Length: 268
Image (cartoon, rainbow, N blue to C red; front, side, top):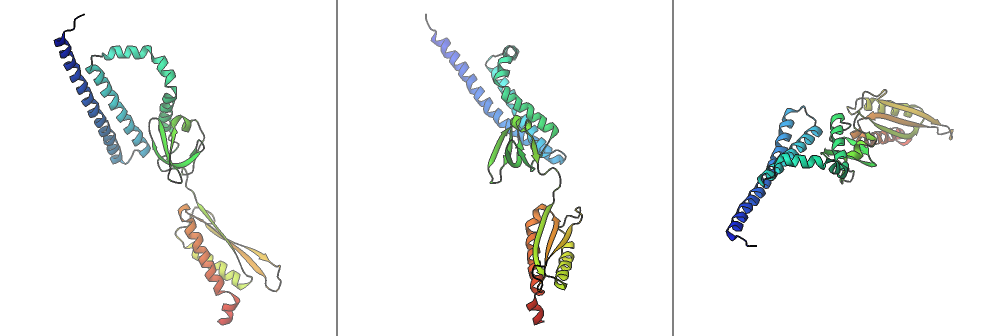
């Protein structure tokens, strides 16, 4: 068999140019997919009406759609007809579906999470035995940020198919509870009234809780000559202010106990 070098050379030149064009098209398509992702994010963010979770999902969808269009264009460049390609894909759809059932289930679960939105970006959730803050939702994965700032990637099917405990869905209150012994009698009443008055004016209290501040008394008569009252201060505050309010209550109580101690009374 004889080989026509001129024909072979011409074919190599043609297919070589096609390969170069295809590579350039793939690079441009990859760049365009990034542009589409950023454009959708920017457009939906400007509206201020679309949830960040929906924005990330739609932007990811636009990126993959752009890549699919570029892939079809590359196939057409090599003479592969899309009609025949669709026929081939239709004939092998069963095999592809079986092979990619896990991936397709993740995609379907991602759509369900987007529609029902059991959580939003920034919510603290427990799902699939993992706890963290929701960072993003893509077509196939849900990303959480753990307490130690670790990345947790969960398949959407695992998220949708598991009970979801959302700690941020409803407003929460923090509970401050401080107990301390004080001398019985007038000092106990004075300290309790002062703590109640100062705490009730604190803007960090959760006014929805009833009562927002409460002081209970338990009398210890073990020592009859020196009776003691155990005061317990309970306050409902915002969760982020729990530690700060607790420390302030301890400081106030320490100051008040020192002011009403027998030695301080004797000095006065």
